[in-house]
Length: 241
Image (cartoon, rainbow, N blue to C red; front, side):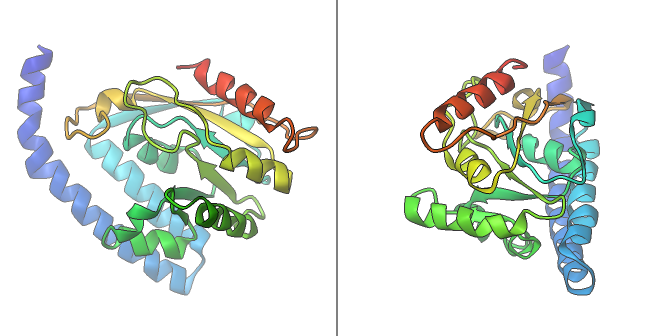
């Protein structure tokens, strides 16, 4: 039955969903750029980003369950970290996390037509993963944007997992959290690897679960014991995988 449903889904994926994804990305990028000019990046992100993510999710379709939303204080800023198994993690987080945040994303995405310039204007942070010094400078500049309930979001693995196991964490998110004294908000996402595995076009409908864990205070952590903080956060995210 799964094979039959997969075959039936293919024409829909290529003839309806794929064109819609492209057109909606262009449309909502333009809407966001207009709203940035006449309103604020936060409003532009809410209207352009959240609507874009939810509409594309509904049309896939995927169904997202959120657990632990009570662990977020919308008046506070966080360094948000999440595991990364699929591009659909982005739709789930943007559409359902429910807080204003800035992505830390790879420099290559800046070249995507419409989306790249839109993300830049919205205040998302591009980093050059091939240049450690430039990456650290980008993260340092991002600190100014984390105020008044706006958070910053990292995929600390740095890239999508190819085997569904949680990869090794990079230090950037934790260094920022310790330096600016912001709590870390761990998020576990499951199900997205079944919907769209990395480096494939094998898209299928499915269910996503997003678990928002309790924030981790960075009090008492510094450069000398930051590895302990990383280990603690990693264990929390991995506990729900």
